[in-house]
Length: 339
Image (cartoon, rainbow, N blue to C red; front, top):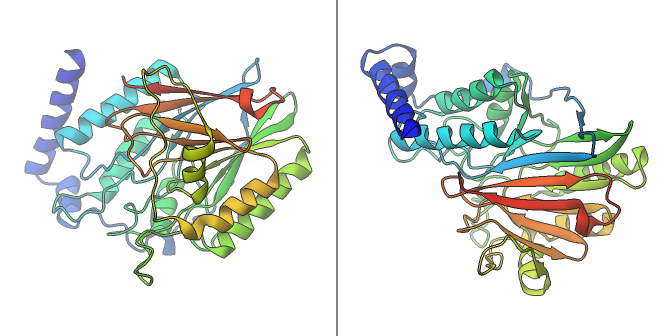
């Protein structure tokens, strides 16, 4: 009941701000456009190393597919309140927003800048590190993925950056340090917007220059520590997610029935990324959103976990990385969180 009244008060406060005019009302009129922001602000940011705890563990709260529109609708405020509650309760080392944080803006109600500010300022006030990759909806209107990265990079606790010479708007990595060495690395990839040039592939795919960058990044991590394990974090799926659902071992979340990873025929062009990740021999996890399953889904396939986070209004996933484990199978725990 307390949460309901908190949301209700926030909703009417925001509504009052719109009715009375001012910056928020102006932003609603122009859809909160940040188009061109990356032309005047940097997309590259020096990111800090993060640290495992005394047991060598590191936790990631994965929140996916929020599809915020204005930040002031009842649904937006209620969902943001849910994210706050999960963050406060589980105190993760990193929150990962795995794409489609913002809806595409075609519904007439939209405020891109306000949504970005709403999310970023909460994490800033909470001293909570968080990371972000674009989804296929985020950059469709009123600002590209490069603009979003540049906008979010101004916040100290938002760990986002980009390699401006390659495709996409968010390519970067974060090292996790344990016992004085790089024990684990997180690599973040932009899986791109809709592919409007090819009618056979409605959704985008990771381009060749991005795949090459990822390969080089993995090699640089292995140079730091030959035994390093890498987790790859992005929005859309690859062919290996289908293979994992058919031939892999389903992770047991504790539900009466474990659903397989939903299959999709919109992913063939990501095969080259699968090839690089598999051949590296050190990728223990590939985690995505995009598919909107009713529960968190995960399969262990060819020594890699393939995880799909549910839509955030249903649940989120707490991923615990045990960096000191030698076996990839024992290195990760997944918990589906509903409150």
